[in-house]
Length: 197
Length: 197
Image 1 (spheres, each protein chain N blue to C red):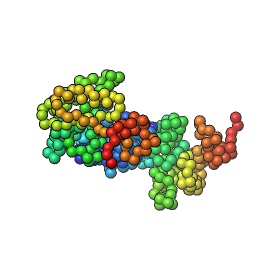
Image 2: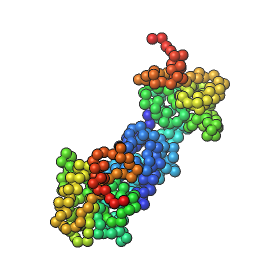
Image 3: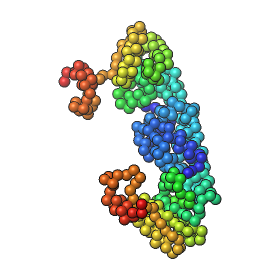
């Protein structure tokens, strides 16, 4: 069908989330036809990032420096720490351009089903940061799932001793959302948390 | 949002067919979390294939050797040449494991709209191969589109002088297809080409 190296590349690419064997083949063909303009730069970019990637010792973010650029940015408010499950959530909040505090990446979520216990997550470092005195407020930005919320409850308990303010993201109607298509839980939360117009 | 190298990698990956900015971000996060097991081998695999990839001087296939393994395979029938638009089509036919002849990759399809003329495609080499005497039959395996079929007509005219037999893929009901959902053209073709049961 094709050289062994090409087959191996297809198999590797097929492991990426959102790609399967079919789209991996298409992707490899796209690359093969654009060797100089695309394939070589892509291979180099992957190699460079892989060589440089580091977890941030302070917040758990993945970036090419440690501490990460967010932790070292003097323009960001170190008194505000947003706790997220995953680096993907950090990226999502950064894309809003509406948060200027720092982060703490848990690296997962508590889950009895998957056997994820508190000691498996980046929780001790969070408690230590909160206890160190610089942090005014911890924003718990877990997913609004059962496991996300039970993790948030657990963290609230653990953080109580530090005395820092603990907040969570607001629930409500998504922008552009139609009431008719919204689940009852969200609608009830939006009603309860109604604000003066 | 993330290091400049990571952003650049996301932008590169987002160019792959089937991926957009969102899935490229997911793919990069997947890589970042699997640096040693996945990201480094992927970067190496891309680099190796990019360094080794060559168009076959005989058939236009892309592989890591020239001539390609299909052209040099003594077990394949050199008297049979299947003409396809693209390497993707070659891979598709190879996956059927039911063809043991050789190939000729046109590298595109005639298109007045896109300004693709016969001299832009790998056609002179095909005529030369057919005229050289070893080829008994040329199978035109263009897509069953207007442009694919006009390319097939053009090639039939050009190949007439060489005296080789020219055939095309059968039209008909796809395996597993339901008549009710089939377009009229395909059904008419399947009726016309009916075979003894």
